[in-house]
Image 1 (tube, rainbow, N blue to C red):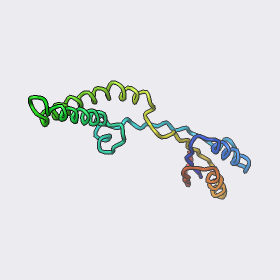
Image 2 (image 1 turned 120 degrees about the horizontal axis):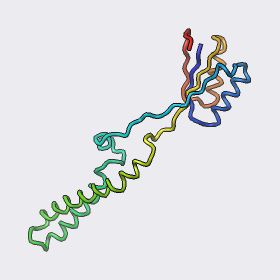
Image 3 (image 1 turned 180 degrees about the vertical axis):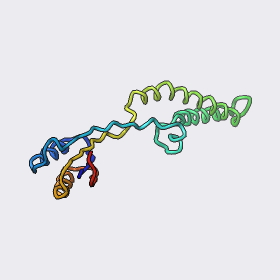
Length: 155
């Protein structure tokens, strides 16, 4: 029988392994497997609809709004009027905001790790049927994220 648990990298994991060894589980029957995150960078539509704050249109909207208000304000004294100058200001401001976002914010996003979640470690313990409850309780005491069992299969 196998008892499988997921942990965050911490001292709790090491203490759980030591507790299992003290309770009679041989070190050869304990395997800790570090998991690597494969989360891909979200696409453009995902960031627009989820509102994660990393959308390409955030800076464009802010700068476009500012330029639109300025264009409409100054448009009262210009030839084409406030509505047209407000729309022109919106277009120019949105373009400037988008370009600034691509130049500065997008570059810093590439340097960050792709995943915002810490990598987990999966602990696999091979034990007898009558030891599985004790192993599960021990792993639960040491902050396992989740615990599962696999019956009747050899790894």
